[in-house]
Image 1 (cartoon, rainbow, N blue to C red):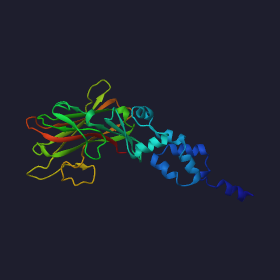
Image 2: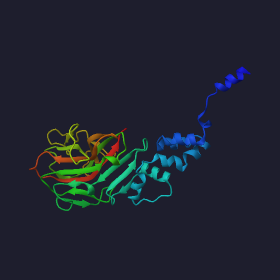
Image 3: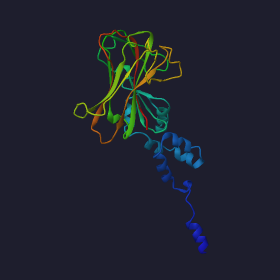
Image 4: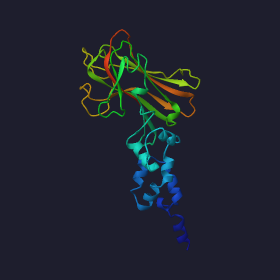
Length: 286
């Protein structure tokens, strides 16, 4: 009798022996990709993993206001979460994209050219709107007609980002074959933080310089640039290229209200043209 009791006391509790509510809570603390993988393990987990209670807890707290600002309609929360993990929705009159990272469930954005600030002139002056090339997220991108002073800024509120998460910002662009002025002097990119009082936060200032076009003497193409697709990066005008503008850790106790990403020329007197701006991407990296 004592041996039977000992065996019962040493019996391990299996995952599927847990109550349905407990399993639902466990899955809701994971990520969309993890829930999908669990749904194919067995029939019991399939039903739990497809329940609305699990998927509602997987979405960000401000998920519904974001969806309401888009033109997307869908029959279920699960459908929207999977849509955001595999694609994106457009916000702000189609000038900002919003998505979720498939592996972490954290929020990702891209600020389209129409929402950027072109200090050297409006889009129809020194810049002009044009139909996008293939793979663009937006209905319109911005092409530089000609300017001597280049200054592009994008802003996003820190509260829109996932908390306790490190983000990287990328400037996405391409150059027309007739582009001019980007192989002589580099451009500079930097990330600034603005507090709740509207003042710039000092410290941890990030600044980088890049040549957007191959320099005639050295023949080097892009300093640490990342190609967004598989097209040969030596073919100008046929791909979106992105350069790293810096990173930011979105801590819950930070006094940061707005993140400001800036690209600017390192000199004023040289004429520049042929730069096509896609936007600025803000993506979680942990």
